[in-house]
Image 1 (cartoon, rainbow, N blue to C red):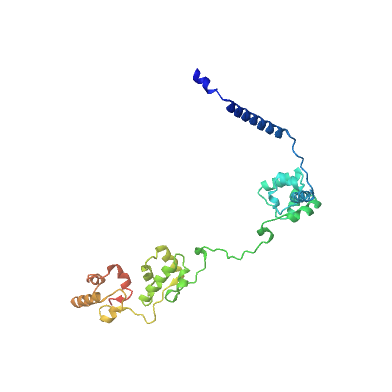
Image 2: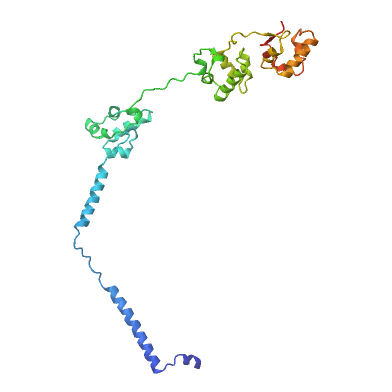
Amino acid sequence: MNNIKSLFAFDRSQQRGIFILLLFIILVVAGLYYIRTLPPDPLVLDNVSSYQHRVDSLKRIQQSRRDTIYPFNPNYITDYRGYKLGLSVEEIDRLHRFRESGKWVNSKKDFQKVTQVSDQWLDSISPYFKFPEWVTNPKKNTYKTFVPYKDRKVVAANINLASQDQLKKVYGIGPALSGRIIKERDRLKGFIDISQVRGVYGLTDSTMVQLKKHFYVTAPVGFKKIALNTATDEQLLAIPYFDDYLVDKLMEQRTLRDGFKSWDKVMLTSRFPQEKLALIQLYLTLD
């Protein structure tokens, strides 16, 4: 108890200090309260003409925007848009019924015919009509009508004289395939039968059918089949499907058999390309 009392035991100088502190706090609080209760100073504008000018300018801009009509497609006039443009409910309904039928308004005359608007309204609003470019400036079709390949008129040509561009006109033949056809033609020194073209890599049966419609084969001038039983080595080597080894074996078998009597005997020759027999027969004869 004595300890608690000692906390409130102040000498005369301390009591004086506490009194001054409390008095200062009271004065500060009273001053703040007084300041808050003072009325605010009135706003005084020396010159408001510049501000008024800006306000008036903004009002004019807003009014001009409200009255401006921008170009629009009359096919898409909504109820609200029609009301703003001065159309009656009946006129708007006529337009909507016409559009619901899948039809389009393509001129101001069409619009008046559909909606039955007055001439005065049409003259004032129609300058803002904006129709699609293909309606206002129709262009003639400059493209050629597509004709299916099967219906196109074909003038057949000699494939031994055909250029790469001519070959590419055949459906299914592109730059690569046409190049391989010409390369094979050069290797054979000219086709002597259309069946030789079928051996070109990448040429399908369906493309071959189209190729036969566009081209035919004429054997090179002076071409004549070679008699296998009397041909020399040089003559046999001129055949595109023969090589040195095969020619030597053919000459050997021809001597042993005293001449070939049938193609079955010819095919018994070592390394004879039996799958190319039909093509080889284009160049050789047993007679």
